[in-house]
Amino acid sequence: MRTRDLGFRTGTGVFAFVLVLIVCAIGYELTRQSLESIQKFGFAFWRTEIWDPVAGEFGALPFIWGTLYSSVLALLIATPIALGIAVFISELCPAVLRQPLVFLTELLAAIPSIVYGLWGIFVLVPAVRAIETSVPDTLRQLPLFSGPPLGVGMLAAAVILAIMVIPFTSSVSREVLKSVPGAQREAAYALGATRFEAIRAALFYARTGIIGAIMLGFGRALGETMAVTMVIGNNPKVSASLFAPQYTMSAVLANEFTEAADPLYLAALVEIGLVLFIITLLVNGLSRALIWSMARQMPSKAAA
Image (cartoon, rainbow, N blue to C red; front, side, top):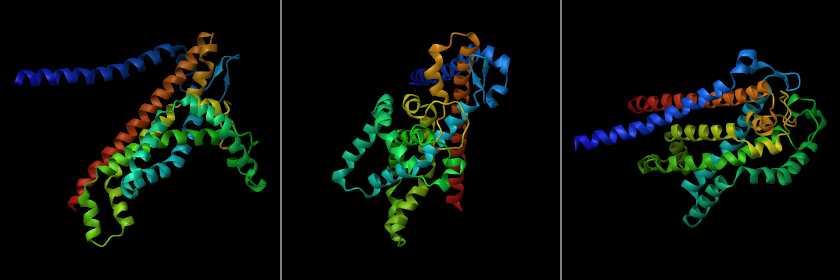
């Protein structure tokens, strides 16, 4: 039996180690392929706004800004909606509607990105344009609402990203809420809590898993390509405006990789992939550290 246990442990350990090797191999290959760009531009590549393939000047700041801006906006839109869906399905929904709603929520996650993009072009962009044209002139003086109401731009990208993120966040949050012990709710009711207060107590108990669900959605938004490419406008400019066409790292890779005949141009695009890889690792590492921190605090608070 000990031999079997040791063999099983070794085998599963090898599988886990393979994942580490794959991540390291991806990082190594991206670094190797972008070495020419790294040597020429250094860390200035991260903070330069110029993207001019003809002149051989490349900077990733517009793409980093567009990726983070659109993802954060999407998270701000999607999180309350996703949590509302999760709470309704797990706590308030009639039994006859629960499974159909779960199926529809998970169906949204299965829709291909290109289909979201087509829907965004024909439905979302005209709707966003109508909203933008109705903004009062006084608000247009603010940097957040400046620019022509084209429909394509940061607002359309954030909305379509939010729609794509909602199924992931709500599904994980729903499973986390289902794992909350029934004794927690019963104890709240026994102390005279209302249904809202009991649900709030369950949310607090499950906050670590919910934070994990939100960060999972954030990671999904960071790497989204086709749908965002089709509605964001693809203009490499740093702008705080919701109306302005902008660019993301994944979008520039999808649009320009096949056109990169010059070695430096190709290396710059690969370095953008490396930057996206690093940012994704940092975001996931920070989210994991936050979850660990909250998990360590829970036992001490329970003991107090």
